[in-house]
Image (cartoon, rainbow, N blue to C red):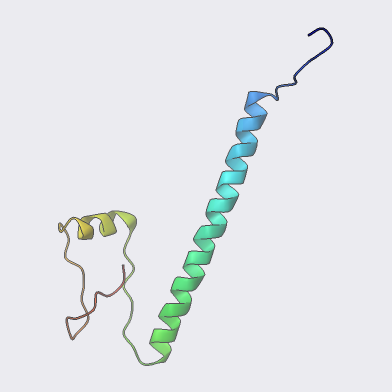
Length: 82
């Protein structure tokens, strides 16, 4: 094995690179979801629909668990937001 050397990158640099790549992908996906959400909301509002209520992640969890009532539309058939 003389003369064979495996170069292992600096773990701090590798960790930093991994975090940058992860956050870049995560932020890109978040922006895409927001654009889809806003487009759907704008389309509904343009067609004379109702205003969409935005829920935080914590509120979504509470609604799913049944601890927080979801706001419903006037006909009580559709949950607004979420």
